Image (cartoon, rainbow, N blue to C red; front, top):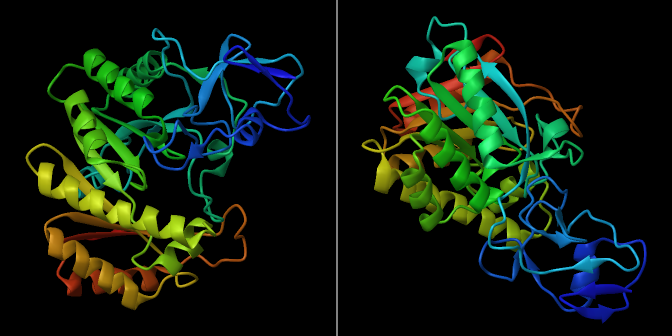
Length: 347
């Protein structure tokens, strides 16, 4: 027996709060603002589905049901968003949205970054799976995370501060306040605040809020052009959901570029490459579509390598990555980098 908003309900044992509430008719969704509760990761990392459980905010997706448990469906008005964040560290080359001239800097480190737990995708070759699927690390407020990242900036003497994942955009309230606090702690003109994202659940309003909060760079990672490719890369088995994620990623990337690049935001688009799941023909088509948006936008080819559940996948050779880069250049893109085992090729 559990108590939900003051009412008693009998639910099965050995299940999660999310599943119990679904049995009671409450709808959880994969896109923000479409259902009462957004529950994108289902691993307890993003805290988007957090609700007061026995008086404390906990993610409904992984919290086990207990007899006598009290659940409130609304968070208190003074609730400060939480999210599992870890991996605060310096980086020598940055992410897909790091400008090419910064990547090729002679500095030892070019940015500091942190990593958001939880993701709405299930990429079998996830290179950061130990963070993405961790739900044990204590959750942080946006203020705590911004303070730690700022301390890392001061420690390593860099100007760029980034958040990656997992997928940072799954908890909108947390991310907006994180960047607002990061900007308050780093008001100098040299400070650069960067977001890496798969762009699948971003909305124009969310992007506008991020820019207003102080974001200066975005790196959308476009995982293919065709739905079947996206499904192979991400592990999403629902073709309708995969199609919607992919279409949203492309449309929001176009919105970001058309609305904010280059005056307000630096945009660097990530493109995964491995012959295991994508062809050079599709790489060319992706390049042509980006050219149709803006040929000046930086594109960074990522050499996806064996990791996690795809240890049998071979890492692309330098020759393969050079060929993929030439394919994008031939498509009309002006600035193309390729990540390889020998360092970055291009632009």
